[in-house]
Length: 467
Ligand SMILES: NC(=O)c1ccc[n+]([C@@H]2O[C@H](COP(=O)([O-])OP(=O)(O)OC[C@H]3O[C@@H](n4cnc5c(N)ncnc54)[C@H](OP(=O)(O)O)[C@@H]3O)[C@@H](O)[C@H]2O)c1
Image 1 (cartoon, rainbow, N blue to C red):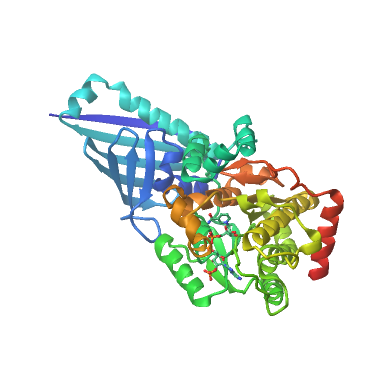
Image 2: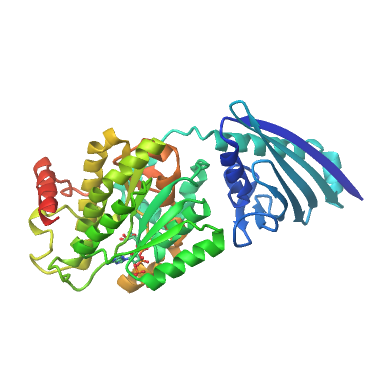
């Protein structure tokens, strides 16, 4: 016994066809708009098109395999669907309208016994599933979400050590993601610069943004590693717009030269992600005579971001907003800025303290730039990734890694908020905040870590003098 059910649903949205097609055709993101889906995974490599395949895990406990059979960008998509309970043929038509795009979804499902009997008994179920998926698609494409605000729950967790720490683990990520909105922003005309893109969070960020079609400039210190990453991004996602720039970022001379090269090229920068970092033990000085944590984690993003401001301003002129994302650390909570000892010369050196103080300094810069650059439509935000299992953590904190390994986030989970701050439309409407899992969090929770207005001014003066 078998049973055939047909669905035919249409929505209209005020978005250009190319944006609508780009979002819907990436079926690995279906979980953002179809409430019946738990997870979508792209199974094939290369540019999307005929032959692309996806695995869609349904909340009901079974999986679907989607295969693209016809691919007409901006006009039509045809897919076959294989699963245990049914097979299907799904067709999506895209049509330009006076103020946007019409999307028509036509599907034929063939249920086999014993589900055929159930499908016959409850004919409205598939209809409801189809309607709620299309409503979700419309909501995702309309993309009218307010920037998230701190909730009483996050504010309380920030004050309490145990819930605060728990939120750093993968359990924190999994609990937070239940409340997230879809991100349908179109990135194919955006240029994003990422430092430290050869490993860990920077690499995961580059992968997520390359998958969304953004043009990327990867800043790395190791040329062969960087070229390999660029090649992999092209192979996996068909993204040919990946450039590489080489700079040892603890050397100010190299940071200046990098900025000069980017300025010379003149390509507007929609997003700058200051991610490169390391926890340095024992104390080290660079060939320029600067303590290395200070040079890499504070001076380098200070110089690079200040120098690249004209290119950020240019992108803001083209697209309405440009963004800076500073990757900090929860370790920042333990320290206050010490303007009189930026290079950790006093007392016994601790890599963790030098690291946390530099991150605290970058938080202060985030707030200052957010305020000063608002008039140029440049938003500046900081985030921390929680605790993520990256090569950086294995090398710098082997004991911490051994103890926490089972609760650490994946690099993709740690990088999620970087990607969201870089991409989401609503993230472009808020500035000067400190984010974890797409929510703003407190910048201080211990007494005594807050700097005075004089200390802020002194920090800016000191950084300008070093620069
Ligand atoms: N993982 C976590 O749990 C965690 C927690 C809090 C904050 N963070 C922050 O997240 C950021 C990324 O860390 P990660 O965990 O992904 O570490 P990672 O795996 O070690 O990656 C660090 C990246 O920065 C690059 N880098 C390091 N020193 C550099 C230098 N002197 N010049 C140029 N590039 C340099 C590395 O290049 P190579 O590939 O050549 O080494 C690599 O691409 C850092 O800012 C870190 O402080 C991470």
